[in-house]
Length: 136
Image 1 (cartoon, rainbow, N blue to C red):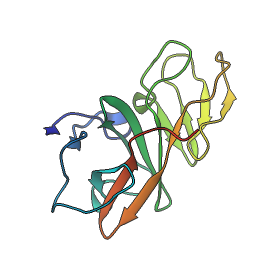
Image 2 (cartoon, rainbow, N blue to C red; image 1 turned 60 degrees about the vertical axis):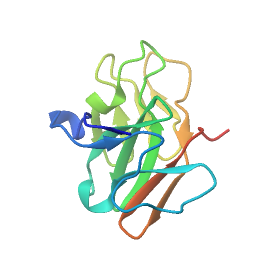
Image 3 (cartoon, rainbow, N blue to C red; image 1 turned 90 degrees about the vertical axis):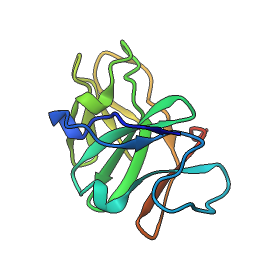
Image 4 (cartoon, rainbow, N blue to C red; image 1 turned 135 degrees about the vertical axis):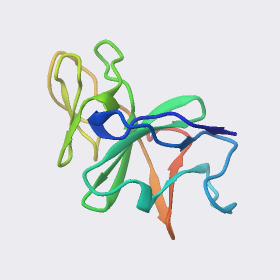
């Protein structure tokens, strides 16, 4: 089932995002718990959006053509990171300006003590897939 809501970068323009159980574009046979969430052409380099994976908001960022996924919630007050800003590999929380590395989820600075969970991302043809469960 699809969900037509989400955010593109900090500007807040709506985008189509897809949750678990649905498919994006043509049906796919991606396995190992990966679900399709968008196309590469829908998220240009330097942009980010949020998608839903198994009822969890996940921030998806394209950094120089490489896609990264982290939980879309800052550990401080659960602010949606997708409403923040993306500068290279660094995402900044819009609430209290904590910063995280989208490659690793590591906290770089700010009022929180925890990193944000990351998700495995795969790209096949023009489709971007995110693994259902965060990485350990």
